[in-house]
Length: 171
Image (cartoon, rainbow, N blue to C red; front, side):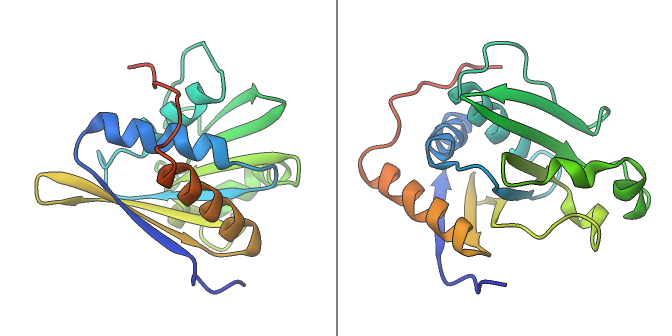
């Protein structure tokens, strides 16, 4: 596994900043990425994922996958799978559901609550943690593979250049 020597921290003073980060991350995606979205309930994981999916061009509803476990999007010539394992009672439920086939070099997988499928879900290329800090949120991103490092470096370049020109659509 790649050591997380490529990291970034972003202050997110409001929901719009979380949406901008999601839109910017959409521009840095490449097929094959596994991104863990980590944080407490209400930390902004689904808000960020929703903005990312909309920035890729999905115009329809973007639902939280909490009850369906996975929402599938085909956008920008990319298969994107948004998982939420919050309701898992054991990691083996990942295997029972046959989710392993979704994780491949042609897709991007966003995974909320990966710890609920620990040992079964493939390791991340990028870990994106959201946490409360004072009156705002902080996003901490750490690359866990060469592919994740490439994504994070591209994201840093996008952010340094002023971010995307995409305005996330409110949900």
